[in-house]
Image 1 (tube, rainbow, N blue to C red):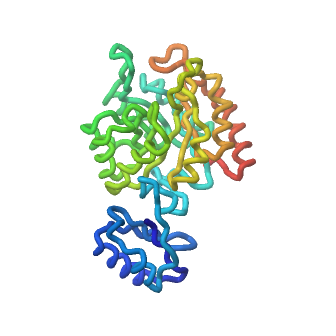
Image 2: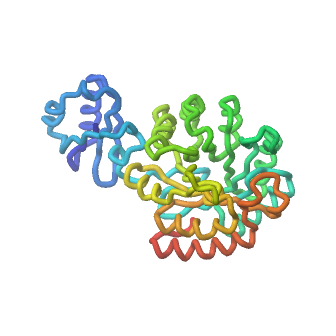
Length: 338
C-alpha cells in the first residue's frame, strides 16, 4: 500500500501520520520526492483501514500495490535510484561502464587491462577473484591473492573495483576492500547471503539468475533492501532458454520492464549473455538504446590465453571502438558517458 500525500505537506505532518500508521502494525517508509511525498507501507496492510487514512487532511490518495516486492517498487519510489559507488553515480543521466577481465590472473594482466580500460573511458574495474564454475576442475580464481591484485590495480588507476562474492564468510573483507560487491547469477537466490549483504554498507550488483523471472529477480533485490541496504544495482546477463548457439539468451525486453516496475538502476552484461566476443559490440549498443543505465564488459589483453571465458572477452582496441560508438548512441537517447 502506498499513501500519497498532498503537495506542501510539512515534515512534522508526515512524521505524525507515519507514527499513526506504525501503531496500526505496519512498517512505514517515507519517500521525499521532487514533486510529491509518499509513505510506503510494508507488512500486513489488512490491519490498515483505508477510510481512516484517507480522512487525514494530508492524504491525497491511497494506491494498493499488488506486486510482492515493495522497496524496489516504482510505486514506493517514483524517482530513479542513483547509487554512489565510491564517487561514481550509477542510475543517473550518465551511463556507467564497468570493464575488465573475467578473472584476475596476474599483476601484469590486471594492471595493464585496468590502465587500458580507464584510458578508453571505463568508470569501474571488474575482475573475478573467486570464480564459481560448472566444473570443479576449471580455474576457480586466485581467491584472496586475486583480491589483493585487484586492490593494487585500483591503487594504480584510481578506478573503483567490482568483484563477485561467493560465501557469506567473506562479507567482512569484501565490505572493507571492494567498492561494488557483485552477486552472481548462481547466487541470486542464496537468501542467506542476500540478507547478510543487506546489513552491510557497500552497494550490491545483483545479476539475474539463469532461469529467473523478472519478479523473482526483484524479490531477490528485496531481500537485500529489506535488511537496510537500498543501494542495489540490477544486471541483466542473459537467461537460459532452448537456444544453444549463444551461451545465454539476452533479454533486452527486461530493461524497459524493470524501468517501469522498479526504481533500481539496471546494467547489461553482453559478454556473459552471448558467450561470443564478436556479439558483445552490437548487443552493448542495443542495450544502451533500450534504456540500460550502463554496461559490464569483459576486456582481456590476451583472450586466446585467458584462464576463464576468453571466448567472450574483447581486446582493448575493440573496447575503444565500442566506447566511441556507445557515446554516439548515448547522445541520441539523451544520455552521456560519466
